[in-house]
Length: 94
Image (cartoon, rainbow, N blue to C red; front, side):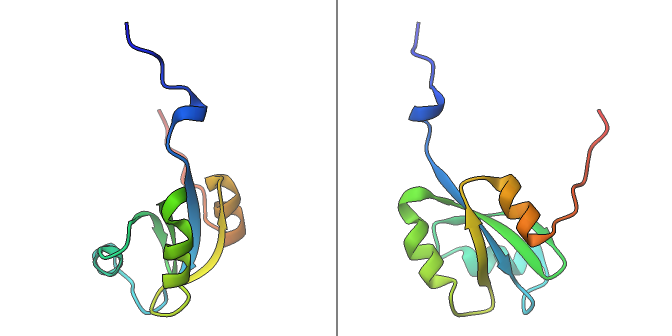
């Protein structure tokens, strides 16, 4: 029987909230982020949330200081970034 992967052993990540006024589609933003170790997580009009591993956080944050995507806020909790960026919560009915 294999060991259970506990929360402490999982990879840590940071969530970065960004303004992306010059890029509007998911495809454009993914293309811009393709050279960075980051993944587009959520997108709304003029703003997006990016997921980054904790090891790559500083380099990605520095890269996002200039360019079409500007870093606004970041946290280890997605809920805090959503609140700070003013994302509308799309609840799904199950």
